[in-house]
Image (cartoon, rainbow, N blue to C red; front, side):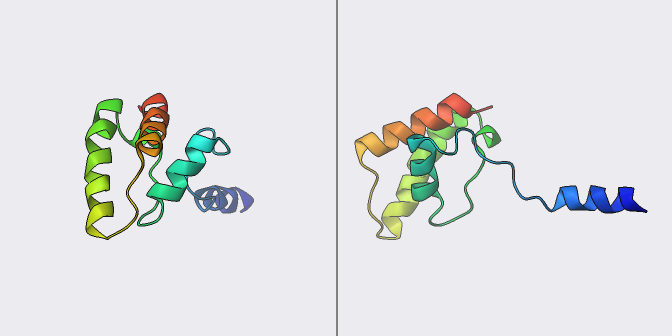
Length: 86
């Protein structure tokens, strides 16, 4: 009886934590990219896909009238995602 319950509890533990979650780059990623939606795990996309997605997300930021990423912020987020991509 206990085994099915333990299996069920494993399913509610939440999403897989992002790599190096306490690093400045990961914190910036969460801060900037988690404002509008759940933060995707970096392995969700390849490095090439992230290169394509970042400008799309910047367009959404602009459409919503939010503060644009600085060049340094963009470079930091892109490097973080490239490092941890699938």
